[in-house]
Amino acid sequence: MLYGNAIIGQSGGPTAAINATLSGVIRGAFAAKDVIGTVYGMRNGIEGFLAENLINLTEAFKNEEDLRILEQTPSAALGSCRKKMKSPEADPETYDRLIEIFKKYDIRYFFYIGGNDSMDTVSKLSKFAASHDYDMKVVGVPKTVDNDLMVTDHTPGFGSACKYVATTVKEILRDVSVYTIKAVTIVEIMGRDAGWLTTAAALPKISGGKAPDLIYLPEATFDPEKFINDIVEIQKDHPAVLVAISEGIRFADGRYVGEGMAARKVDAFGHVALSGAGKVLEELVKEKIGCKARSIELNLPQRAAAHIASKTDITESVSVGKHAVECAVNGETGVMMTIDRAEGEEYSVTFGSADISGIANGVKGVPAEYINDEGNGVTEACIRYLAPLIMGEIDTVYEAGMPRHIVL
Image (cartoon, rainbow, N blue to C red; front, top):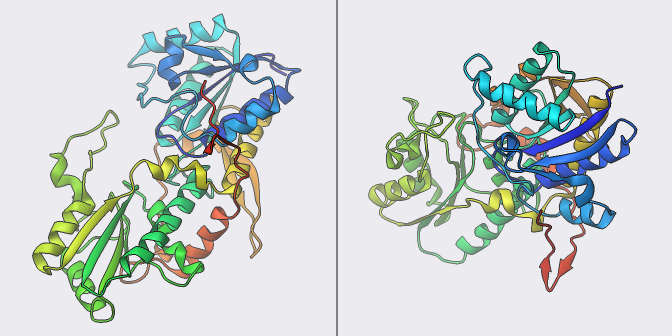
């Protein structure tokens, strides 16, 4: 067995469950005290690690109550970053610096909680450590509300985000149904290249029988003319139309609907900056139909709404963190943890691992069988997939009428 200290980082967009995974890794490391000494956390991901901005988590979490509060705290308690790691050949100084810090703090276990870009860091780092004869176990722990990581059935954080989206859409449905005038409400939901989170807008159907009239995902080509025609037809039946869209819906030529307002700006990872797909469609409805129209961007609460977290999601998030430590202690490296759904009608999962090379930089989109033939809704198979992920409510600890959070 490999003896030394452990380091944990969080990267990419936060979620309501990422700290539950952090708690799971801490719990797992504490349970492996025979081989893991001090547990460190890196502030602001790999950027903070390079600056030696570390926190001693062994000292920070000495009792069960603090870990319990960490699990109900949204966002990334350690802070996050969106640093795109270059290859060792393109940036040898950075990797030499990493090895220097690993040796200084005797880091032998490296856990990185994040999404696609974070798994790219895990891939590069594990290969570099192996090629430089530094014995260290590097394990990626999945996290993203986008649910777009390859191999795993779903990702920690997705279920809670789905529960927030589904509940919010259900509440909006109640609100927009009170008037008799014609109106269109467009709800814009996170999802650049994968529409998983937007599919959750259909979940009110399992509780009350009604869902948005139209749902559009990046995986199906968006036709503005058909969009207008669909609304006109729906308004013959009822005046208030509710539409759910992913921020990354695209026209037939591949352009994002929301791209026009962003002037093709790109972020550090080369992703086109999106802004206002909902607003674009709101103006289109006003121009073509002339009825009242509004757009609502759910924005940050989609990934921060811990007050309505899914118990299933939080429980699995803690478990996948624990299993990450078990895998590392048992000698695995260069892997990402997976959540594997059992076959059959009764929902259950097991936790595994998969080689990071088959995951990093890949995108798992919503499959065709989950999208209706018209490309403007989801199927019953999709709803059956989603439903177990939002089940259960956590027993939140309150203080002065507000949920307690932990700040590191």
